[in-house]
Image (tube, rainbow, N blue to C red; front, side, top):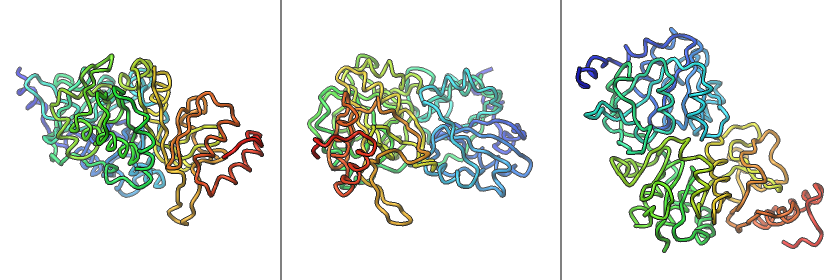
Length: 448
């Protein structure tokens, strides 16, 4: 039987395919822009026939149909490996919950820890002549998902870019149970790549001069890392490399500006390595069949030993709050959940251990409450009660706000408090000093 014959034999409709889902099942919806679409809508239509269906996924770029069925929490529970704003809002609706993890371990979670995965369904690129469906920009851990799922349903989307890689970036027709030809929607656009704010630009001006020629870059999610990337594209830097969890629009800007050669990397020379991608259509067009880019499993990309083996590794990430001890919260504000650990721990440690490497945690000095309008300092005496410490105080390297840059590596608690207060918003510094004195991490000789 030819691959095309096998394809036709397994071809079915979304409504027929989701009939394999039973009450109590565990499903996997894919990852980010590869999340099931037509299959999701078909499953939502079956809601009144189902109870206690658990679904895993993450970084949603659109709201799934299963979230909007009547009494959704009775029928479906969304379990997220990393939350976007869509999932964060769904927490308050009682349908969405976070699964704590270091993102680098996710393929291993499926292979070694996940005891039940009844159905996997996600979007893929059209099958090639050799019978392979490419995972597109959402590969990350999907090969491991396919290895443990009892049933695999692929939803073909002609608009899915084909993302070339080294390994584990596709699934074969022989291993697929059902094929659904989806509605071919355009790839979801992930925001955050618009015009940078004044604060984003001020932080970028402090970070970019710290980056040497030949450095290898990782950028986190958000407007500030993107702003830094755009400034790098406009800088005089050259011979830069890419080894990043998430591939964002700023890397396309750098590539088009001739900044990226990746020739100084000791591994994957000449290629921009990443675990998944999301952004604009420009980004998807750039990645499509581009041999300069290498999609690889997150267990490969985020591996601390691999990251630390790359000299002059530069890691740039954001934060919600930082306390005077140097603990970084990037996941929650108190018990209010925001995102997840993702790969921040891995890249902070990898850059910290890299020869000449630097890890930057970047944020605005203050945040304003959207409801009350009250402005508070992101640099706090201690983290808000209930906040999750994403990066420990022993791993913090550079912290950057619009008021300055502080390298706390090797500093005693009182030195660290002084350095962090020195880049806080000036109107909060006296208050922070008073709190530091109460905690016995302040010396009278300190000068701000």
